[in-house]
Every structure is written in C-alpha cells, then in structure tokens.
Image (cartoon, rainbow, N blue to C red; front, side, top):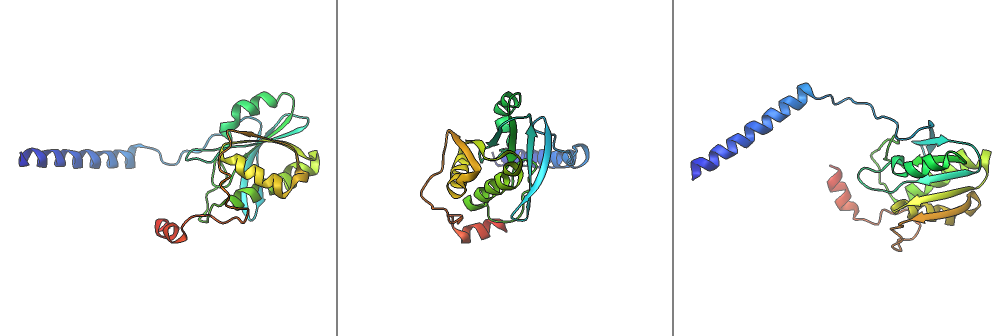
Length: 187
C-alpha cells in the first residue's frame, strides 16, 4: 500500500513538472488583450490612474458601468453597448483594475470607483454632451449611485441592473475590510 502511494505521488510530481516545462517553453505568456467592444478605445486619468473606456455612436450620451468580479470589464455591457450605439453616443468604462485599466498596487475601495465614475462623467462626457444617462450593473450600481449622490448635475438618469452593495459603509471611501489582513495578503 505504501508503495502504491509513493508511486502515485511520484506520478503527480512528474506530471506537474512536465506541465511547468511545457508551459514555460511552449505556451505564449505575452498575449495582447483584444478590444472587448467595437468603436474607439480611449484613455483618461482619474486620481492619477490611467483608465480606459470605449465610445461609439452619436446622440444623447449613455454611460455603461460594468460589475465588479474576477473577470469584469466593459465587455459585460456589450449587448447594451451594441444596441444603443445605433441611436446614442455610448460610453463603456473599464473601472480601475479591470479590462484595459491597469491594476496598480493600491486599496480598491468604493471611494476609488466612485471617484473614477465622477471624474469620467465630469472630464470625458459632460463637457461635450452634458449630463448622461447612466446604466450600471451589479456592484457597479453601488458606485454609480454614490457618484450620482455626489455629483447629481452629471446625471440625466440612473438605471441599476441587479444592484448589489449598499451595505451602509457610508461614502468615506474606506475599504471596510481588515487592513492587517490586506497587508498580510499583499505580501
């Protein structure tokens, strides 16, 4: 029985080693991200962070805000983006740390995302188009609602799809988590 277990452990080790060697020499690790949406991809700066967004169409502005999850990006809003680009000026923002917006080593808090939305509306949308209709998905809805509360003049309307969040943390921008645990996990 002990011999069988040792053989199984050796087999697993050889398989893992083989996969590591194969991955190192035969799998490309420098693939470029492809654009998630049609139209033009642009960048702007919010609180010193470079952020990305897509824009397409003409007419009254519609801003789309994606959710927050492990694989989130403006791509989540693709059906709405494509549908409304025929009749509206549609913007789809990649929130900080998602899509083409780089992920920097900083605390990602509700305040950071809220500020990104306010800055985007104020600097990229409002000067040319005025207040925008904003549609936000899931946890992105909390950040869009906070932004509407902070800068209502930038919003023509706000639509929330399957909103989550809204847990009473306030609008201070605090992470709401355990900073000691965050520092430990950051190592």
